[in-house]
Image (tube, rainbow over all chains, first blue to last red; front, side):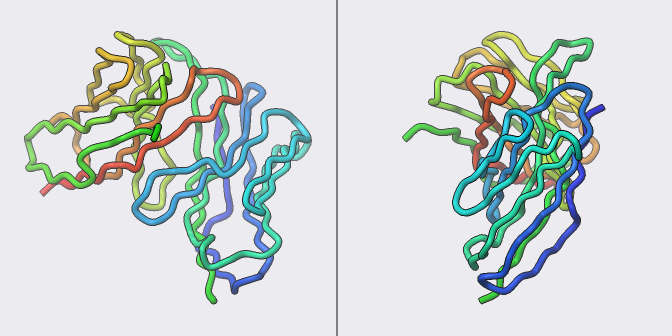
Length: 118
Length: 114
């Protein structure tokens, strides 16, 4: 089945440091890839996405490139801020079917906690 | 403002009781989902619905039930059969189930069994 593996946290950085959070995936189909961010006590917000190989998703200074050859979608930001402190989830959307029906389903990694200190 | 509203934000349940979590969306989305989040874990799919009056089990449906009588509403009932219900529950929706479509999430509901 589909799976997502992302680097375990927590990750602690100083403000203006470079950020990389690694994400690799296994999928039976041809998935779309997403990064979601979760601030304390809140739901998830879409950060960026890519729907085909070599696509680059970007938003708020964050970037990730869909690498089919390495099955990866690593999240990067050149200069983090204190306000970027949150949990980051890598996810894939792929066609999924069981005895009850079929759908495009999101499969999530376990999340990486990022803390940015001033 | 368009969005997904979950209520209550915090809920305490006694063992043996059923509880219902509300989820309402005004985004005119066809598909709705319920996910469960445990500390240090990713999200796991409980149930999903692609259209009114239809829903399917996800990966961890045992001990849960849902209904989809209206397009805007997808309530989740946590029954007494759910052995470990303490978790953060997230409702989500999307335009329809298709490649690349974004799934949008509500703010979540914390359920604690006391």
